[in-house]
Length: 101
Image (cartoon, rainbow, N blue to C red; front, side, top):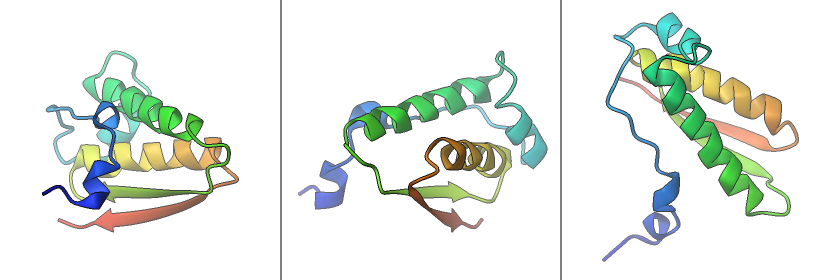
């Protein structure tokens, strides 16, 4: 039996990547700018998934953002993604939930 919360997750908005930034926050954060990097593709796909979901609503009031503070991709790219979300959805509440190692 599928949990009611899992039924609300659209499979097309699940973004996965197998590359990492080697436990380096600055590498994860700055790689979002580099258009050639694997992390930039993950960053861009994540932004597109958030944008698609936001377009489904007349008014998006809040975003629950779950990210890791361990590792380079989870902490660095997570920080860059959180910054982007706060800039582009300034009128929405952003609730960051941080997962520790």
